[in-house]
Image 1 (cartoon, rainbow, N blue to C red):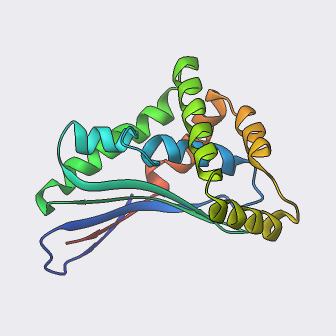
Image 2 (cartoon, one colour):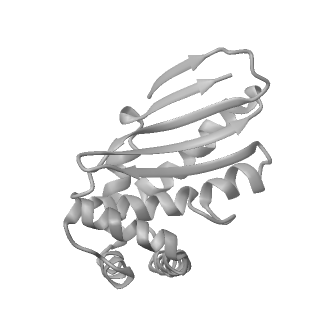
Length: 182
C-alpha cells in the first residue's frame, strides 16, 4: 500500500484509504456498490462503524464512499481519530477488507445485506428530489431511466462469489493508497 503522510499539526488525524475503480458502464460497479454499503454505508450497523467505533471507540467518524463517473469511479474509506490510533484503525480496516476478500459471504449474510440495501433504496426513493436527481443521472449515463425495480433486478443478479471476486480486485493492499493528515 502506498502511504502519503501530511503533517499539519492538527489534533485529529484524518485518513483516507482508496483507489480508482469501475466506470458507470461496468457491470461490476453494482457489486462494488453493494460491498461499499456493507463496509460503510448509511446506518450504524456498517462493518467499519461496528469494528472501529462501537467495539473499540477509536474513531469519531468512519465511512466508505463510492463516487461513479462515466469512465472510472473513486472508492474510499475515510475516518477521523486521535493520531496515535491511526495504525490500530488501519489494521482493523485491513481485517474487514480481508474478510470480504478471503471468504464469500454466507447465504444468510448475503440475503440480510440484500434486504438492507433494498430497504435503504426504497426509503431514498421516497425523497422526490433524490429520485429526480437519480433519473437525471440515469439519463446522462445510460440515455434511459432505470427505476427502483431495475436497480433491485441488478442487485438480485449478484452472488457472494462475485462480491468476493470484486473485493479481491478492489481491496487488494497493493492497489490502495492511504493519505494521512495529522
